[in-house]
Image 1: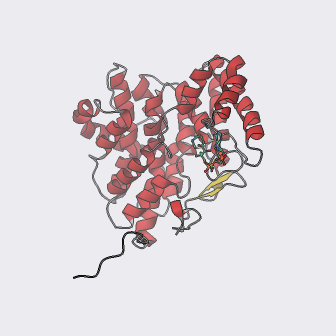
Image 2 (image 1 turned 90 degrees about the horizontal axis):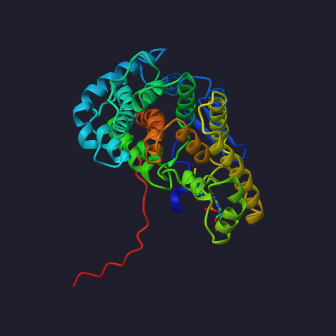
Image 3 (image 1 turned 60 degrees about the horizontal axis):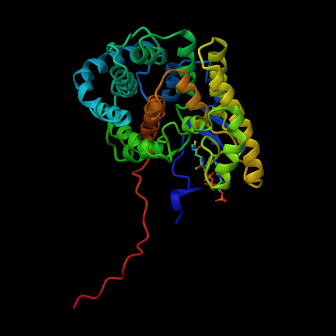
Length: 360
Ligand code: COA
């Protein structure tokens, strides 16, 4: 028995490899720095899906753009009801309206759905007109245009870098959930819904903006050292640091930091916020090294995710839904891989309940 299935290998995959000691994430043979900030989400998707759909075109952008438009037409009448729910639940509810198929078309609609849903729900909440997708734009640019009413090239590149950086990450909890469902030969929609459920939890993708809560609580760079020391003395964990697998810096943190740097150069970020974050990061790393000298605790992906998504105008309660809009590509690739080659996933449990009494 391995609690949490730690160190259990439950699948063979050609999709991605997480090396926690080297701090390396490889996606289909390419290290993350070769992808994030360099290729659009559609290209990363085509790379992941290569070999898993017989009719995969070289350029997925036009088909994904068309899928966004179809999905919008299908979802528009249901936006008002979903808007009454917390953002993530609203997105999950809207995604559940997608067809539960296995075709490339069904897969593209499932990738389009979280993007269209979160962007439309955010626009509604801001009191903006809900805009139909623009099929000629890339997925990242279109999400921002729909959510905020306008988008710059730098912002689109920033979100594209994020969506690519989180597209796949080994057998994490939501991806495993997707594979379990796919192993029953249910459709891709069922796999994606299971994965959304797993992603929501605060131990996976669902700690909504805790890094920003920490920055708000610290307030100014001068308060960082005393606030962090007090927090550690109280036995609290610093948000945005530490990881179950990485013992060195999370490579996705660097990819996102580079995206923030590009945005900053274009003047699109709050410089004071970034200076505060930089001081908090350095102070926290030094404090953690003193606090847990035997445990390498480094900056994780959440720290820079929070900064980047905030700079792009996303409210903190939508971060998990934006994460889903990127990770959905990985879920679908894993579901296809599992359904094609995997057996039904059906582990055993060890019974520790009362011994049955003999029948009288
Ligand atoms: N701040 C302070 N102490 C931390 C810490 C953090 N961010 N992360 C781990 N530690 C400490 C733990 O308290 C524990 O101390 P103990 O041995 O005295 O109990 C020790 O380091 C090992 O912690 P453990 O929970 O076993 O590490 P893990 O690698 O299994 O946990 C996380 C990984 C992500 C759950 C953990 O680092 C964490 O809670 N981080 C903060 C939340 C966060 O950023 N989440 C987003 C993750 S991407």
